[in-house]
Amino acid sequence: MSDPGLALVTGGAGFIGSTLVDRLLAEGRRVDVIDDLSSGSLANLSDARASGAGRLTFHQMDIRSEDLVRLMSRRRPSVVYHLAAQADVRVSVARPHFDADVNILGTIRVLEGARAAGAERVVLAASGGTLYGDPDPALLPLAEDCPWRPLSPYGVSKKSAIDYLVAYRELHGLDFSALALANVYGPRQDPHGEAGVVAIFAGHLLAGEPCTIYGDGSQTRDFVFVDDVVDAFVRAGGRGGGEVLNIGTGVETSVRELYETMARAAGVERAPTLAPPRPGELQRSALNPAQARKVLGWAPWTALAEGTAAVLDSVRRTRG
Picture 1 (cartoon, rainbow, N blue to C red):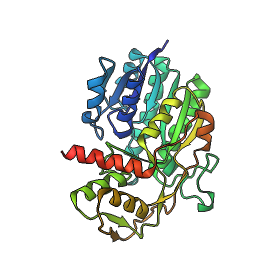
Picture 2 (cartoon, helix red, strand yellow):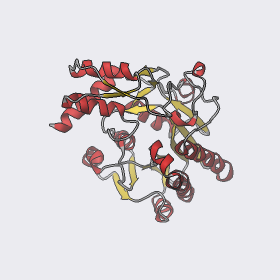
Picture 3 (cartoon, rainbow, N blue to C red):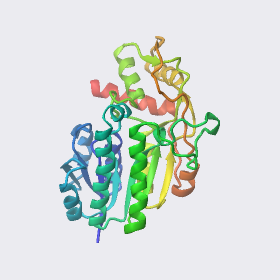
Picture 4 (tube, rainbow, N blue to C red):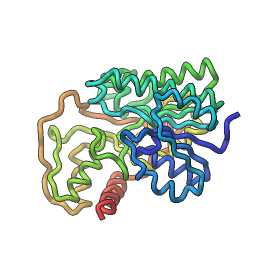
């Protein structure tokens, strides 16, 4: 039998993962973190380690390791939150074998570990931005019945991970929820990742440096705050079995509007620098969260101005 008090978070030293760990500990859970620290950082877990009171256990391990199944079998978590991934689309294009190794074979290791542990459920961090490809803008915000047509190796690998979840549910009775995430932002976000535009803008604005917008800034994204996303993960630990659910706001925000919102909050009047558009970039994106509201009782609550102000405050504190 699994341990009903233990949750395991792969990628738990990352931006979203560490925020999830904080939330689980705050709710009284015991938490195991598995992270190889290739992109995550122990600094992200400093609050958790200080407040965990012996309820946090960190394991530095690659999810592709043969030791993973044995570790999970011994620890016996009841719920596995699988956030560890190769998450850079550009890396997936340059190194598709590596992307598949981490995101597909690594996910199979996690599923085998969950099965060996007698876990009740795996909750997967999927990618709403790549899962649906480049659909007709008239369909925005996209619902879950929109065809899955990923156009990058990263998107294909995350779709394959969902396919494996379905197979393990049918074959082994291991339940799952997959959360198709919009553009998640918040404190601890890596400004060097391709999805970290909020963190990038925050760093440049507070340093008095120009911010670059690629194209004319009219391209849109669905920006959803990390605390709201973590709430969806926690809810999915006990609801939404067998579901793939969009986690976003359903609202399109242009990159230029994002910049203007953050510049006002930072007290900066400088115009952004414009650069040529990046090839292959989606022009518009937004996810309809109606099904998550129905199944999980979840809805986003953090307004863009409030969330980006929290990022600016976090960067200020980090810089002292």
